[in-house]
Length: 126
Image (cartoon, rainbow, N blue to C red; front, top):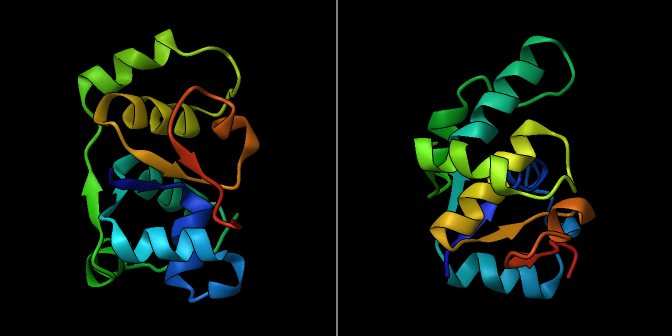
């Protein structure tokens, strides 16, 4: 099963912060295909613009150079958000959960609220 990287995990990976990853996560990242949601690109763009985080200005180029592809948001993903329990209110995280469910992806995230959904997930610290 492929991996879907949460925003903070993508930034750690791109910034070379290997110390944040445990052996299980490192193995999974080496052995499986990883993708990034278009929602993550959108979130980083917004937060960069308002000064809430630093990220590469050429994010799509950087993501591609890292061997990652971008998963588009479909109407089915957007519609599935309505079927999710209210365990998480952040719309970016909710769309990631919907994508993980519908695309049968394992989401890599340190966010315990995301991992509380009935989805395949991996804590990057493991």
